[in-house]
Amino acid sequence: MKPSFLVLGGLAVLLSSCAASPCMAATAEAAILLPWGDAAIALAQIVTAFLAPLAITAATAALARIAGPLQVLITTTLVERLVRNVGDYAINAVAGAVRGRTLSVPVGSAVIARAVQRALDQAPAWLVTAAGGAEGLAEKVFRSLPLDEEAATGNTLPPALDALRAGQGAVSPA
Image (spheres, rainbow, N blue to C red):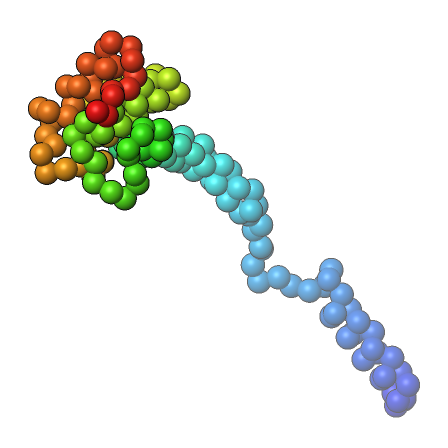
């Protein structure tokens, strides 16, 4: 008997379907699955637990190192602004003083006394202290004013400071 074409075709289909099924497939090696994603997350958490405090400590140390000079810079800027503002006020408040013109010794003393009194009355105490108190502030105002050639610390500052101590707050520019 001769096998028929249909029998041979059916047998071929049956064999190919058996060979393609997973239960009949032969594996060369068994695959091992590792949960590496979980391990990577755990490792990242451990590294973060150690590095985060170190980063915070480094940032705090850098801020502490910068804070001192930054405070000095800000205080110096505020003192300079105070000297400029009270000097401008005093030039406007004292008779005979004109902005942009050279001041004589008596007018300069009056301007210094008025400027220091304004700072003592209006500025915060810590800022006046940072400026060197009344005497230090008077010296700073003295240096900021356009004064005559005869003006010196010996003949301009003492009348202004004497007027401040006497409570007048201003010297007569006579």
